[in-house]
Image (cartoon, rainbow over the protein chains, first blue to last red):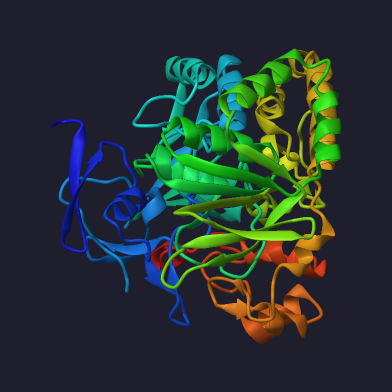
Length: 82
Length: 418
């Protein structure tokens, strides 16, 4: 289907509508903890608009990407920073 | 990394309703207009597109007008510094844009105010607008149990959107009292558009409990949210849920305006009748001049766009409409004023600064925002105090200190120009 894209979240394939954000793909894959805080707590997105920086993940080997402002592209490799 | 110089007559920062309308009217007045925005698509938050489609008929109308107007868009780029008067720097992935302008219109919008309570840092506790944005951009919500908490009309709009998207919205907890909200309802009389909006929302939300004078006291879970404790009067109870959407009304994104030296008061940019800030050639429109909703943003955007293009007479004709919306905004902000009980929600071990994991207890020993930053690193993480600064202001009545560049974290190369 041309109106869907497939991304890889922690090694798992996730199919998303074109235009979806990486943050939504991660949550859809069943992962809620996007990163560990400085004291080791699990954290996920809060503001959804690029302000809080809680949704930072590694995208195509680039660390600290804001997943709520990154659009899913076919074959994108997404890793949460556990 | 490449560096591109871009020259225009009117530069608009922010592609939400105020920015788009300002850009459109400046362009219609014959100006060369460029709009820069940090999101991949135009629309800002309230007009955020869903699966590439406009979110409302009004948004669709404006997107079409914008498409036909002669406006240059730079999307996905974040403005972070002013190296000289009349120039802004923006970063987009690996590129830096040097944006040169004659007139600048700032329409940087607002973000939600988050108040710390135990468990608010757990995954699956989102901003109310934050959860809406996630669903709009691909998160499946069908059958998910959602509790919506906080304050303001945004809670109703978000609950309505989530319900229509298939979520099981268990309840809406509004901290404002029933009397205040009812009085605000009466103030809508005389504003037909707002009454029909309110009635429509009420119909669509039938079956969802709207609890007044009610707020969250704790979110519970190990690795993620499992349930939330709500309080209404003396009564507290627990609700199991998948997602908690919380937002205690809105605060303005004034950091860039402050970097340029624009005068602010109580968290908003001060403007004159033509939406001019205290800095020459810098106009401000929308939520950064005061929280007032979509209609006020639209009329302020129009005034700013016309005024920046030198069309003062046309701008003046809009003043009565703007006055009416400002009156509504004042009543709205009074109705949803935050109760002081909410200052008691954070316990000693509750985290206030999420970037640096600074607890309420550690902040209590500081006597100012500056002291807190120096002693605890509160507000020194990547969000630069955008989340905890407003919370600390509410909790401790601290005032913000000056803003310094870059106003958003950028690559070292963007700062050094190498």
